[in-house]
Length: 171
Image (cartoon, rainbow, N blue to C red; front, side, top):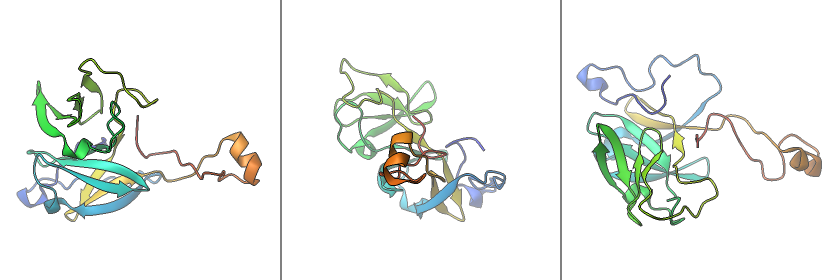
């Protein structure tokens, strides 16, 4: 399965996003909304596994998901960004300081003279998206991984914070 790249236009005779991906057993999908609830080229915020995600439905029918928090301001505003393209690549411009990000990869294309306030750097995390039966599903982590210190503190593999890592957001 390719991440974030399939369309929602099953009614037009195209395969539904996520069709034929049964071999991926490590991914847990969370239903978020109906695809028709997403306005074309407008963002919408959703909560996936306790994390804010910005969803974008493109003119070609694809639905893409990136982190909601702007790495340059620290504000949860990416779903309010301006959707566009650069050389055919779908983008979103942050509504805060106007940095431009590639929606498919999360890469910051134009830092506009600011430094990111988040330790993760200037790029957005992305999430795999599938649309099945007209419903948008976003991948979330499927298993829990604890650091050695966390496991020692609680005496188990879950860890004190219950941090997850797997097929969820990709930095």
